[in-house]
Image (cartoon, rainbow, N blue to C red; front, side, top):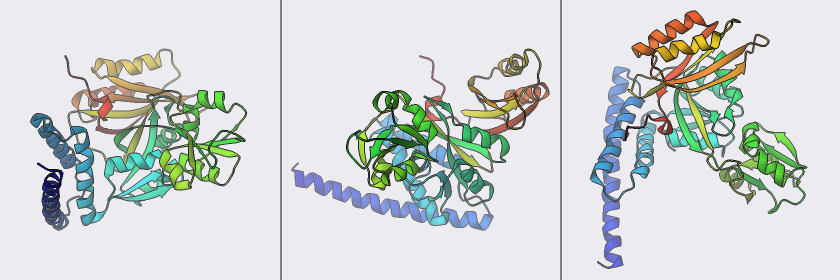
Length: 365
């Protein structure tokens, strides 16, 4: 077939795809109307999850030409657009526009959702607590620098729950108004971003002052107003601020992944592949931590993370943020948490939610 013939066939297929998308949107509208009449929730995450899993399995079994890795992104946008016709989801995120958090939020909820920009991590929690947004997205852990302290501290004192997680590869860029490293006096960025690039900055800009900003996008805006400043931010943040990317991938570790928490006032049902996050404090007794963890071990729970933070209300006391596989409604988890509650000073379940893609249990060879 000639090039023109192939292009005509693609055009015809595109026309069919558009017609099918319109038919799908019509059916989604009908479902939305039924949900309104029955007072059912417009957003059904379990339905979305099952649909994506089914389609990914179908593509994998067919072994066709369309890349399975792209299927989730395509259908996430289709579902997002259909849902927006019923009632747009409102998603709060750490802004301004161009942050890695915004990119993670769009990866999780699609472009058709309505995004609420928040200046700080506590402001994202506020938006969810006050009902200004259905969900909030905040960074919770980085593979290079560990837990995001602002998020952990808020989780302990707030009434919101972790509803889900999104993992995103992070590529840090050095951006500024110029095109080289000459005359740099200040480096602006979020504390996590600065820490992820500690060695690179120390080697290449040893005399520059580090200036903490609320977010990487806010840092880019600050650098745009100062010829002697640079920022550590994303390429998107640089483009939005009218800056040049002087260096790419300046993070100290090539593999640099941030886990973002999706916040909500409600929890999720069991999926069979879940994670539970808790935080607890300990009594001042010898072996207290060992005894606490023994309850989880005896229940056969696989711990995936444990991190300590200073207790905000008690000097020299600590909180232990812990993740393990399983749902709070699983009998083994329920029993373990009941036993743990009797052992520790205070215990709070932060949420049970589906495991992220990189945390899925690996099948035996």
